[in-house]
Length: 393
Ligand code: GLU
Image (cartoon, rainbow, N blue to C red; front, top):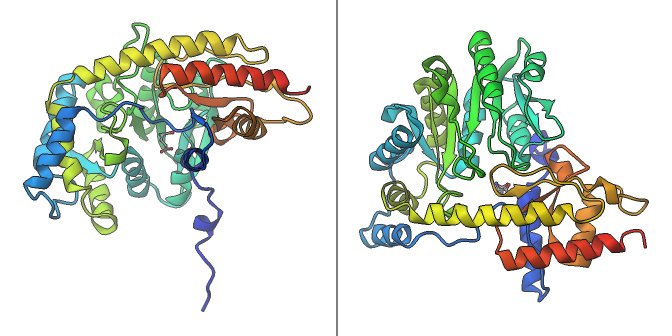
């Protein structure tokens, strides 16, 4: 008999994006004037038509269990979206709806990985990928990107081994805002086909590409690539629906079936009400999406210009998502030695919430989420500038 807890569960750190958001919210509740650039969450409200569909679902008593992998009407709306926007053809058995993009990714890891299987993760990368790989018994293999956060297919090729089970592609990227070059994506996809490993394509920021850049859905490269790509997406960012928790995966039927088995024993169906709202998100008018993206682009340009004006801070132009990932190592000194101390100082002194780059794989950087109002961004950058000026004084 032993009261010892599971070793992975006790050693795994909690999600710092969630923790920083909770801390900032607590400080706000305590009366502090905190500006939040921590969590990646659109500051917009869920569109009215989607909210109305959710309310209608409650009134229509859509409150019972649904099929564990999602209601047929939502699967069809997802299938139509993938056809219309990404040129991809899927059947309902190749689609599963989960409790948000994070849950979709977790189910993929559980369905794919045997103990010791390797997953290649280009870094800097979203904090939860590596922890999910660990939770599923796998091993993360990190591949550094270049100074503009671009992924090199050559470097990826060098990290492939007998145990490689998958690679995670997240373009546009959280936390860097970088997009993958088409040539590199094609080369990585060819490598995956040649060696026979999966591509987990986290496309949750697909709509958030700026400056005339074009989003490419990995599975659309060829039929062979599609066969081994798990396309993962959600309504969270595109439709400002983070709290509704609806994510989905499209891919090989056997993998989707395995994910469905796992889901049927862990969470059962995603929230029935949220599923009906998500149908409206996909099928209803899309005006809110374009409006939101325009505003994000304005903020991106402002952040790019003004963060770069602060002495000691260097920012590569973010191409997508709603994150800036500046190098702040130019301001490090005896007191502020890394990104964690930098963010602590900013929270305490400037009352600005940011996420340390260390958690994403680079201690020289911090993540600034510009999914906040332009007024907050302007004031936040002023506060950061002032606090940076104080460091070392
Ligand atoms: N993906 C968002 C972020 O990185 C939401 C929080 C999370 O799930 O980590 O901030």
